[in-house]
Figure (cartoon, one colour):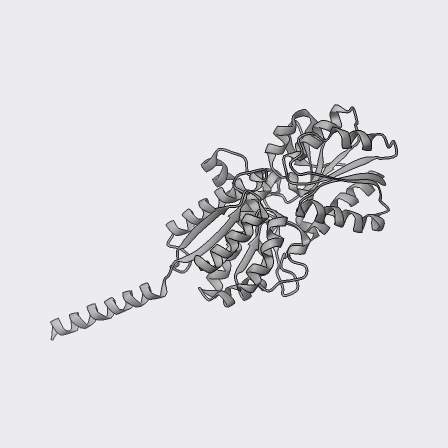
Length: 381
């Protein structure tokens, strides 16, 4: 009788284990990132962050027992490659979700592909068109262009700057930002006296700078890009002896741009999240713990400073994981969970998604920074 009872117990345990194993599964997550190429300052930190987080979560047993299989595709920032990789990840790899791409141009090219494939897309790019109009399966983690423009123009208003020049790269990000600047300028009493578009692969912008500098009414310059040309713009302006204030977009949030520009980066003003000044925040700040933890882990592992771009990857991964935690491995339930996520603390801010807002960040997610002594510090009036 005792043996019979023991056998029943063992059988029950065996069945429970087999049910547990049947429920747990590997979740395939694709990532399309500019690991190499001109946008590698974006995709490199994003890729390293995703690999680090995947390793961490799998070492803890995964999400509800479901481990992550990360498949990274290096697009080099090329929209055509992004299209090919998106189709491959959806149709061949059957991924649960896609993180990325790194750039706005790439994201806009694959937005409809992911929507048609009913595949969750968590973009690491900033252009507002990524989430406006809202697409059911498409979300993004960087702050909206309109919020960033608001921060720049509020700063200019306080400094009594009303006449500016705009420079923008010929990328999706550059053109989206230029559009927002032109749209909001009248509201703040800002006149855009000149607007120039340059090739993202440019290595010398001195001719454009000379043209702008000839207009003595221009009080400040706003540059909107994410390419290495950001550093070239700064160098060319200062080499020309033009000492107007220079504003950059949130695409300036990697210290490597400062290092590339050298002394010419000193005094640049730009809006960004608070990751770059995490150690200077009050311990009571709602993001402090997340920002300092990510910073310490990333910098210890990779021996390089964190950037806002790695932060975008961090937010995308963590938001997806939270969705899986709440919705299991049912994609529709995970999508719904993300769309209704409130008070989620990330590196870019505190996310509050809704059916009409697939970015989830408010104006308070942006603060003004400047370059001082070759480092990022909070801008003080």
